[in-house]
Length: 414
Image 1: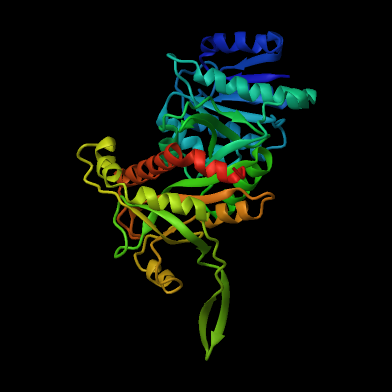
Image 2: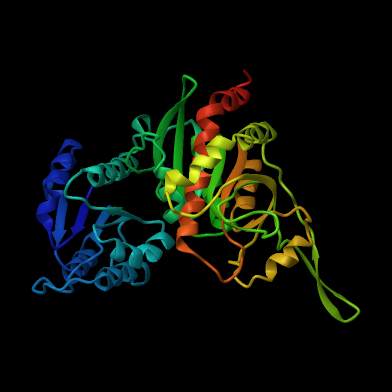
């Protein structure tokens, strides 16, 4: 196995080199490049199983100025230029959040990962080692020691890394470093107790927003990990007269509001809706109804986020529609309401999750919780998105820590 580390600070990888030796990877198979230029030279002449790429690189070895544009040029070469040998996997590494944000779209489009470097802890080393272990086992064809777990209790799929996935990882569920379950998908493993029963959980986020990306990733993970329950938390738009910003919505049912047929009637183009509605799991809904009546829990929720955030939260149960477009005009939601008079929310992924789960064999239980951050109008507030993601994750925590043992007992037929 050959690894290329492209970073102008090679000394910080000493601990990683020791861990690689424990895995049986000889130091002579680990190469260092300290600029975009030398990285390109390596990629033109050698085949690598893994490229670890610093998001901030100088253009040439003799330069001190660094830029994420230099690293992005390497990624563009890997994607589009036949003169370089494409590495099997690419991991980005940085301690600069702004640089990570600038590079995240290109990484996510190619299902690569970005990890955060820290001089004070070694989680970044564990994440890289997990990836190396998986690649090594694939190369060696060692299925007996595969790191893939064949069963998990709860699978959480988020649409966005920030703020949705971040809010899930803030739950005190003993999260481990990310690991690959195949050549494209990374997950985080965790666990917690519900009334004395240990519950295993896996969390991930989609590379893109939308039903297609969420459905594909969900179906792939369901096929590999056989979760008993799958859910999605995050943010959504609410129907103004039905919900308030900060409320958490339990989507039951969900459907694609853009599914139908364009027809011409008396010379006028019209859209004939043909919705396929999928209900959330009924046993989970009944437990959500119990949580909804817990006034103390919802009263305390905003103060645990920020004492002066200004939000209040209640739990609403009702129809939530999914579509492929971000709504910000304030008018489209009125059209969607004609499809379902009890509509309480609109978003982009839930129906994809429900459809993937329903199409699996055996199908896991499925449901979704999303916090309201706007009314599908131009008024977007970052703190509202952060709070909505937080509130939906906390309701999930309350549901499974209080009732997870019962819900999973239903799956097992007990």
